[in-house]
Image (tube, rainbow, N blue to C red; front, side, top):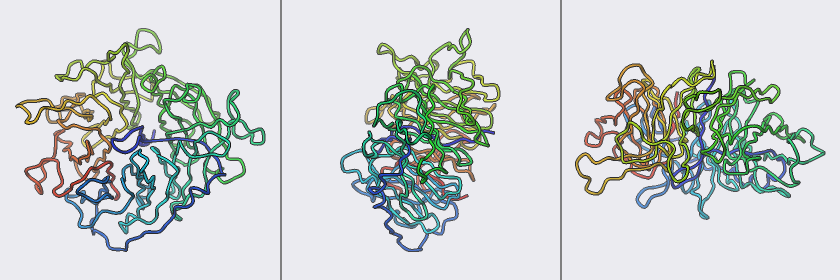
Length: 501
């Protein structure tokens, strides 16, 4: 079985672009280790048994921080927000659910670039670490002891910037920095294909870690040169801290942005973003990790008349694996100023749309025989909610904003799509159909609530609660006049995570 990994991929509204990846470099860790300051605020807790943490960036009327919501009944927790920097946004929960990692920055010169480690049991910040720049990608080891943070602007002496910070989550401090000079005769384990100028370093942006923790795959900035963006760095975490960290650079991809490992980490399925990210063709590429060779390749599109051809445009910037089924979302780029994918079959004022492609990994074949139309934009959020409902989020999509006051029946359209994977109708959505909720804004967080039939979605800075049995906003008896809202929860929110089993 293939285990899905959260991917994410670049760009939050007012915050940062998500998911980075980089190299190895045990030197130059001094700047980073100045973090690790303790700031626990005591042992008082909310007393809630099933909690969602929601990051709130600063606004004029509310405090920035991580807010607690009772995920049993959709009410705000009784405590003040947990301090996590000036503009907390992206969050990652450790596999054992003991800690939540929060990154604070908004991409301006005033960004604090603070990485906060929250003790989930104590509901307080255990430590803070200052990073040397923005990050979009954090992965955590399976034993929840170590976090790897990709920082494309990480300064490296004698090289161009880019490295991965290694954070000891118990100590709350950075213990190493991973970077690997492509040309270094004294370090033969850093294997680079071909000839690269001395001092060159790849500013990797996205990270994916295997299920066993024995491999990290690092992907570069998708807007970089093809020779850089088409190469994956294969990193061995157990070698970090040794004289020569083991890194192998493997070419032959097409602007890859994510990967999904099999159960024993012997192989992976790599998602190539292709044309949407400045490359050629969106695709899935099998990757054998035992000898770093490439296997079967399949375009992410409706198959054309010849092998490895497309009957229409292809796109893929985010994916999710459920069993042997992979769901891939993306938006074909414009050509000659015109969208490749019109919103065929939808009643909308939008002129450009995105695509959802369904792939059977057991046969390496696309299973949908007609295009599945979703919103456009850069898709970097995807989650399978209860009742077989697939939630797909994007940023910078085509939004339809009605005039104020809105006329009756006016269209409202944002960056969220909900695909019905069932063979039965859900609400008004037919099997294999797509719902586009009447909400504006970028989607920056999606969290299915496992104990219930609801999904929390952060869109346009607001938290919305969707009932997965009807694909519409939930009726909340605590706030009956505002469907899908939590009474008293005010702010500009970025991400949402469940922190309890």
